[in-house]
Structure formats: C-alpha cells, structure tokens
Image: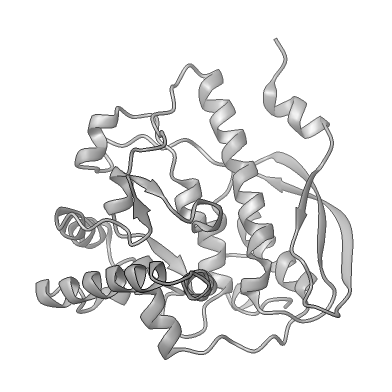
Length: 278
C-alpha cells in the first residue's frame, strides 16, 4: 500500500493565494519547504509589494490546512480515529490564543456582518470580557502563555470551567469556519470525545503536525503585545485600541520569514523572527 504522505509530496503542488490590493500586481512562485524532514511543495501567488501581515492570512491558513491534512493521514495510517466532528464544540470553550494579525482579521470579519447579526456577535464578545473582569481572570491575562506550565494550565482550566462558548460558536459549530484562527485549525484530537468535557494534557491526544504555523505567526506578528498573542475573545477590543502596523514590508519577505519560523530556520522569539524580511 502506498504512503499517502509520499504520494501527496510527489503530486501537484498545492496552490495558495493571497490577492493583491486593487490596482497592485502579484508575484507567483513555487517553494519547497522542509519541515521535520518532510518536503512540502506549494505554488504561491501573493502581492509583490508591501502589505499588512493580515492580508497574507489566506496563505498561512491554506498552509496550515495542508499540514493538518497530512497529520490526519498519518494518524489514520497508524490506526487512530479522529474524534473531531461538526456539531462538537467542546474545544470552543477553551481560551484560544490568536496572533495580532488574526485579531485584526477577526474584527474585520465582524465588521462585515450585516445587522442585526453583527450586534449580536459584538454583544457576545462584550459579555465574555465582562465575565472575565468579574472573575478576576482578566488581570494579567497577557502573561498567561508566558508563564510556567502550571500557571498556563491553572488559568486555562479556570477559563474553561466558566463554560463560555466562543462568540462565533452557533449550534455547536463554528459560524466563521473558513476564517477561523490557525490554532483552531491545528487542534485535532484522537482521544475519546468524553475527554473534551474536561481537557488536560493527560487526557487529550492531539495529532502530530510537522509544524505549528500559529506559533510562528504569534512571533512574526508581534507589535502591540508583549508575547505577540491575545485571547480570541479580546479581538474586538484589541482592534479598537491598537491600529494595525503600517504595510512597510514586501509580502514575499514576510511569507519567507513566517515559513522560516515554522521550519525552525529562524528561532521563534529571535530578532530575525521579529523583523519580517530580515
């Protein structure tokens, strides 16, 4: 029986595209990225000139989907069953860290919603932020993921026990599925569904991925936060308080830097990673 990963690697490259701003030109090219010893080929089309990192999210989303597809294939080949299904929103009650560019993108998604749906979604965001203030969890929130594992777990479980669904969760399914954050795309489990009722490192088995694009984007997109991340539920208030960085780096250079972080060629947190195109 042939190896699905080998077949995929040997097949036609996956096409990833981020459309250029109106009136601007695009650039195309093929890249081969080696991640954890595995070569992944892509045909890319991206703006030729400077853009905000948010504009390149379609490329990083597509790349993440490809890594997840490969991870799922490997898990199935090993005899593991994927537990995630439409209509199961247990993981959508966990604290979800997103990068700054993704926060601005989510705010744009909400701003494009028609009324009264937009008002309803904004009210959900506001209700969660009020709840976090009332429980004291909002204090020091930006340092959660920067702390030790015990602190991250304690804060995460305290958040989960509040039972607050993601503002985009409707009928236990993601209402913005095509635009969901990278970390949501990466979260695929093979542990029993019952384990998701009280998730922990001991009970949850996630599929193995050749890289974590979400982590790379946290580092490369860092501008207004200490760690490059915030909670998804803070996205709207964050976008109101912080303007997006200027589009001062060419798109190809930014793509190259993110991919280098994913592949480990640039150490996350280094000066090179913090400066797209360096």
